[in-house]
Amino acid sequence: MPTILSNRATTNRILHREKASKELQTKSRKKASMVESPFKPEILRGKVALLTGGGSGIGYEISLQLGKHGASIAIMGRRKHVVDSAVSSLNSLGIPATGFEGDVRKREDAIRVVESTFKHFGRLDILVNAAAGNFLVPSEDLSPNGFRTVMDIDSVGTFTMCHEALKYLKKGGLGKDPSTAGGTIINISATLHYTATWYQIHVSAAKAAVDSITRNLALEWGTDYDIRVNGIAPGPIGDTAGMSKLGLEGILSKAMEKMPLFKVGEKWDIAMAAVYLASDAGKYVNGTTLVVDGGEWLSKPRHFPKDAVKQLSRVVEKRSRHKPAGIPRSKL
Image 1 (cartoon, rainbow, N blue to C red):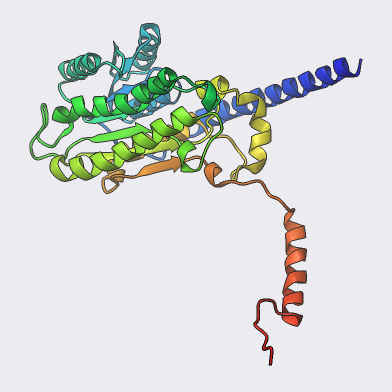
Image 2: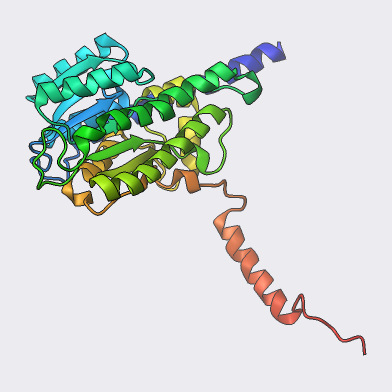
């Protein structure tokens, strides 16, 4: 009987957390829909953006906001129905958009999609690499093939797309006026590898590689081709596949207790960072990965209540004045 009651109590706690998570995400979506962009609607007018993974989640929100700020949008994704749905949604808002089925792990797909984007819109100014793979797994249970798959999507896929887009993005590239600046690349990263993250060795390694790609291309292509290359590292973002796929929804409310800004981020937050980096507002930003996580990766659990720390500090200070520690004493 005690075991049954214990299981019921555990189940109730999980259900309570999931309910709280859903309520928080609903409030987050309502709040995001009411927030107006701080940027002018025409800040990206005349620009063409290609987004991998731009048909859902954070990628779609970036597609939406780039489009709302004047850019024409091309979306690349492996699931045709997702891409088609995203394009239809953008078109219904008056945003010029098209979509292409493709896998960033395949170079032939990358070449085809980049060329098709150029043929459709006549130019390419912005590349956003948002395609990613992720799942929780202990390192000893992760097969080399599983590790390689995530590396291929996140790291190799990012470089492949950058490589094939170069001739269109560079200053004086195809479809560009030689007198105008080069384009910009935004790589979606993470903060997992800044310290260490449980059961995420594959993604941590992949995103560390993405950050390295960002810095190196910023150095080389910023110098040689006038292309700005930056990244965005999102923290926990509500109403995304990542939150549900990684099983984070159930512990959302508990995690918020140690987050500096006491809230989970919104997809809108990441999209606004992308608008900033893609626009002239970020024209002097190159080679950086902008962390958008409310300071979450810096957070650590509080071992003592603040009042207790203040009280202890006064006691220690008083004691140290009367009996200084660490002062050498003469034996003479």
